[in-house]
Image (cartoon, rainbow, N blue to C red; front, top):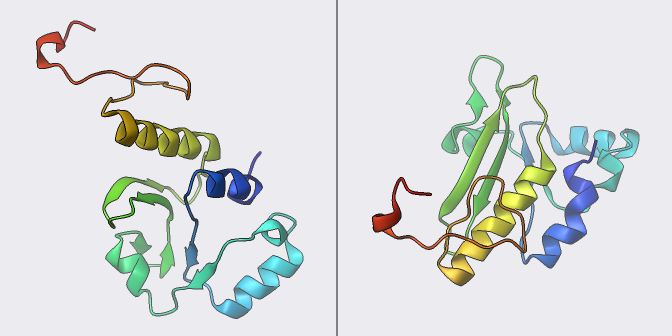
Length: 136
């Protein structure tokens, strides 16, 4: 089971940054960092959203529990959300899929090609051609 922190250097090499945001306090982040084997690897900023304003504005706050769902957002340099995924409380994130998505978005930005399902770096993309719709 790979955690996001295990891939931080790879993510940075893709000119991307991570922010960890939770409704926990900075004190809870500190204790978690000191006691959890996974959290002790975290090298990226952790933000304490104690007012719930960030979680609420991104639509990931469970109002009943005042906790945020696990969510991933990929935001481009202009501030546009390019991808978001919200996970149920019972389901963990898939870092390999996050990385594939980030790389696919960067590939598409660079080449003006889309990427098919299951696309992996090094594979060809797809040119947008409405004449080919339904034929591939």
